[in-house]
Figure 1 (tube, rainbow, N blue to C red):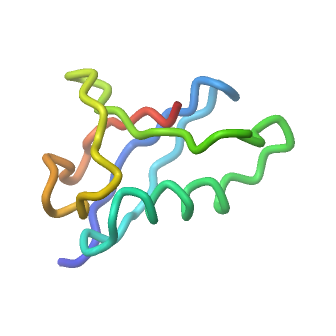
Figure 2: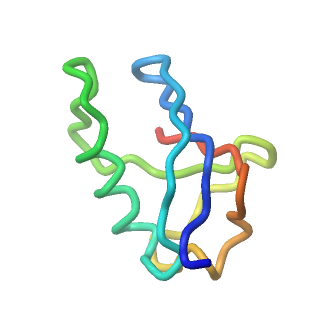
Figure 3: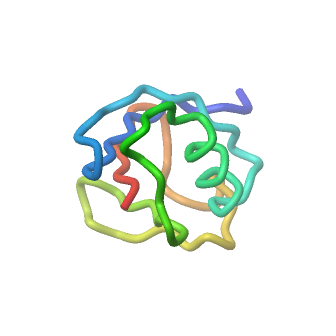
Length: 80
């Protein structure tokens, strides 16, 4: 399978989403896709947000692909 289903939480707008993300893309590109996909007028980040693992607090390296991280189906991720 070339995608994983994550649970994405965005504290800035206090919303949660279940999102399919491709495993062959870099985290940097995933963040851009997530920002474009969020249709909320209160969410307009001025700086590039980062992805964090909700369980461990680990910040994901934007230069790694999803498959190079511990992100798997049902991983809870925070976009800050």
